[in-house]
Image 1: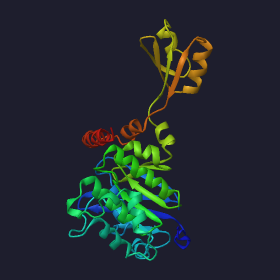
Image 2: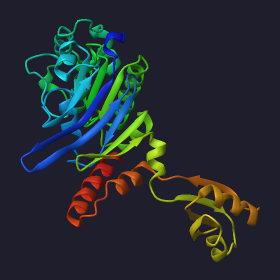
Image 3: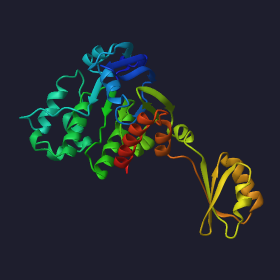
Image 4: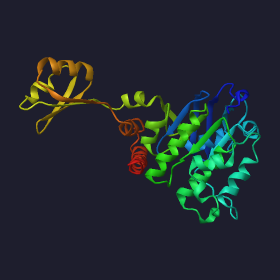
Length: 320
């Protein structure tokens, strides 16, 4: 059940900044998340995602700016039971069974969900009687998810929620999240698995060097990444003629297929069909989220660029 008295204003970050010594982790971030939205935070390692999440949860205080969670300060929203968090760091309480830990978390909330239902939804029921110290990494993540969910919070904040979970487990996790989001909950998650953000987020916020550099639906973010491509089967076509078509930047031959890089795919496609009506097996592909990630998080400074590229490559390697 969504607690409607908690819905005023959604999540609002205003000119939020945080530094650790000489490191400026978050730099004057402005962000609004509407009630019921599912928003993904993306960015290379060290971009400021976890620090932003910590400030939203009241675990870290900003140096400047404000955080409002449904019209209240983060600590007040947490005390009211409106917020559930699943953090990247920290270990589960020892000397407890998984089910006992989830029941303990439920006791802290005014209107918790049935523990048995949450254990089933998160896939933790099958090992509920195991001690937390005996759980695998993926099992521990499921228990963290159950602990964040059992209080029936209005806002779920998840930092790398599927880290350490195998492919099948990640699919099950997001199926459960679809169920949660379908009940009107607000979800904000940070992830290195770019395909998860593409598939499950209503909106993507891309952070680099402590700043928001892109904010919008996945389709909008991807549209900002490089040229669109048209692939068509067209035996014997002249590359020079294809490359000179309106909206086409370059043309390449791959066997009987032609690959056109386009600045304006709509114009190029019309020109292609007008000049080569025999073209078949036509595919039009936009920029991918990976391409957008790499392009938009690039830095003019050579050193920072290298660090960002390394972090992005590592993130993309995990995503694959």
